[in-house]
Amino acid sequence: MESLITKEIIIGDTVVFIPATRKLKNTLTGDSVILHTPANYCLLNLLANRQKIMSKNELIKASWNNGVQIISDNTFYQMVFNLRQNLVKVGGDNIIITVPRRGLKINPEIPVKVIDAELQEQTQATDNVPKFTYFLTEASSTCYRMNISLIILTVALLFLSYFLYTSETDVPVFSSYQYQVYNMCDVLYNDEIGKENVDALIIKYSIDCSQKRHITLTENENHSRLSVISCPAGTLTTKACSLSLYVK
Image 1: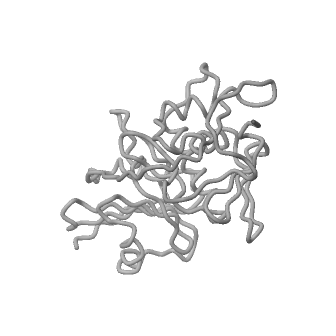
Image 2: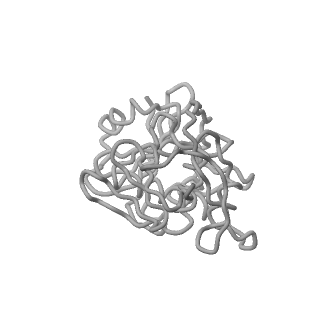
Image 3: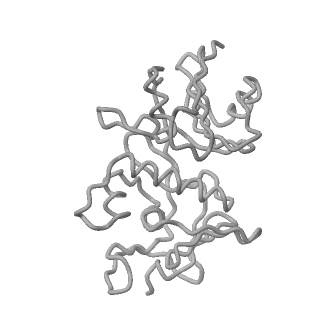
């Protein structure tokens, strides 16, 4: 039985993941991206363990695979954010989902298969592949639900928005937010909003998505107040970001 890293993994209907070359590609459009090594190993481990939730610590250990280098939470969440963006670039929306306070997993509603291979799960260490190479199984996965409470709207939120920074209690502020794309905007939103309402809120409050931007939407539990953080894509500072509050 050959290791998973030598296979082509089909995610959904059109996305192909080739771990050996760190490539994601769309079989219809031909679009492709090359992942950084930690992101490649992160996706590989999530796919190999798609029947369960993988914690932050498990994914850090698997993605960097050294046991010596100290990886900050900020570095980890930025890697996950970039991985999700690269999946979207090749048509893989909502493949990785967040289970609040527990970790990440592959969306159980998205089919995963290995070309010309029986899906089995195991680890294998060789001179040419990572120590944590896994095999997939053909077992079906289960569904999980997500929830998050209202975030305190302070000036410090601006400094956390774009980089998905963590709080002093070591709980990431936006780790349980959901992600989707609207026109040219990358949008994060909490569970109080719901995926079906994101487009309507962007239109209602005239949020500009004619250029690439990162948008964070937060609605409180009684749906009476909405905060919108907007940052230009590619910015390395929060000075260019804006915070708007709306009473509904």
